[in-house]
Length: 363
Image (cartoon, rainbow, N blue to C red; front, side):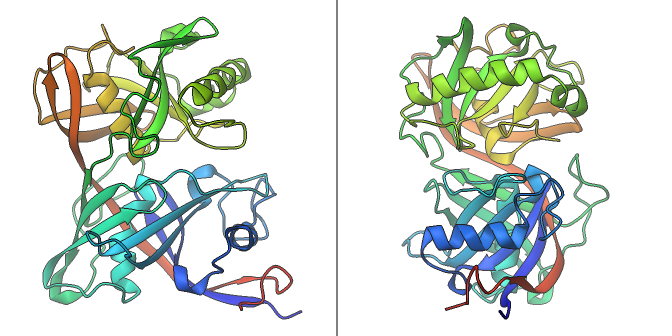
C-alpha cells in the first residue's frame, strides 16, 4: 500500500527536538493520531530505527499547531510525548522546551504573520490550558535563528526566544498544592506535590540516597533508585487526583540539594523513567517555585528571598538554567504570578514524513 506523506518542520526547541505539524494535516481522532505519531517517530525500538525519533525521550516529542480557538491566544499548541521503546503516546503533559520553537514554527507555517524586528506570539498550551507569551526575532519579517544566546545543553549560540508563562499554578490539577499539603510522606520519604506548569513530586536527594549532583549516566545506572522513585510517584499521583499514573509521564519527579556550582539550588529532573539530560522548561518552573515556597522539602537547602520577582538559578547535569519568578507571600503562603526564561530554537529540516498507508491513508 502507498505510504502517506505528512508535511512537517523538524526543529530543535530548547534542549529537545522533534517534528512540528500543522494540526489540520493529522487525524482528529486521538487513537488514530497516536498510531500515526508512533509510526512517524518509530516508537517501539530503542533506536527508533524505522522513524525520525532519536532514541531518547527528549527526541521523541511532537508539537501540533493550529490557529487558536481561544480568545486570548494566537496559536494553539498541542503536545504529544511519544515513547521510545513502547508504542505509546501520552497527551496529558506539555513540554516547555518544544514550546520554545512553537512561535517560530507558527510563523514558518504561515499561521502567524511576522512583524518587522520582533514578533510576539500568544500561545495556549492545549494539554494544560497554560498561557505563554513568546517573543521571537524576525528582522525584515523573517524568522532568524542566528544570535548570541546560549543555553546549557545545546552547543553554540542562537537567536533568543523569550518566554513568559502566565497562569501556570495549578494548570493541570487546578491546585498549586494538589494534595492540600506542603509536604506528604510516601514509603517513608517526605515529598512536596506541586503543580506549576507541570505536576511534580519533589524530594530531597539525600532522602533517596542521592547527593543531587550525580551525572545523568550515574542516575541511569541506579535501578534501585528508579524502583523506589516509581513507587513513590504512583502513590503521589493518586493523592494528587491524577489517578493511575503507571502509563503516564505525569507527575514528573525531581530531587533537590544545596547548590554547589554558584546556583540557587541543585536539581535533577526525571521524565520520569529516565533522567533528563538537562532540565525541562515546565519542570524548571515547578522546581523553582518549590524552592521559593516556605514549608516545602526545599527548607534548609537555600536562603529564600522574601519577595519577587527573583531569578532562581537551577543547577542541572549540564550546567545552569535561570528562571525569573514573580511571586508574593501572603501570610507565608506562596502565590505564583508568572515565570519567564530565555531559550533558543532552530529549524533543522522541512518537508514530508511518511507513514505506512495501513496506519493512516491521509483521509
